[in-house]
Length: 105
Image (cartoon, rainbow, N blue to C red; front, side):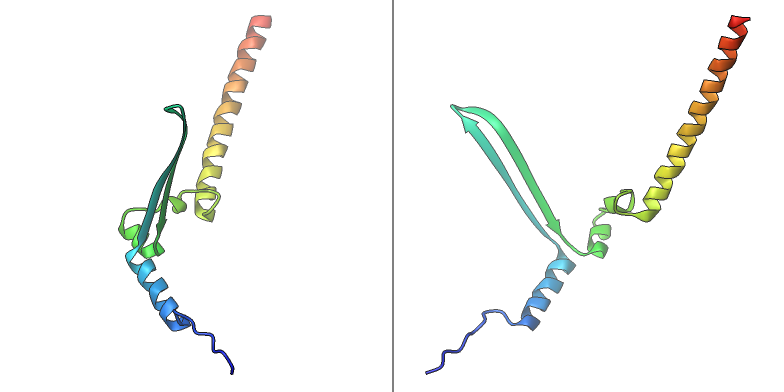
């Protein structure tokens, strides 16, 4: 007698569930506390949100757009800021060098 393996969720149903979760969004939150003799030693707060990019933007969440590690556009902005800082520092160094030369005379 051959046994049949049955799956509780078919692939199409799993795809539907995933689509629904990404469309609506889901939040999972939890806290882990480690205490010894009523003294809190460590607290870990876990917050996880799963949603599509469109849903996240709709909710006002778009931190990945300004993260230089995740966004090539943001990296360009950071490079511009770095270049500005570098130019300002070079200007200050030249001014200090001029002051030192004038005092040395």
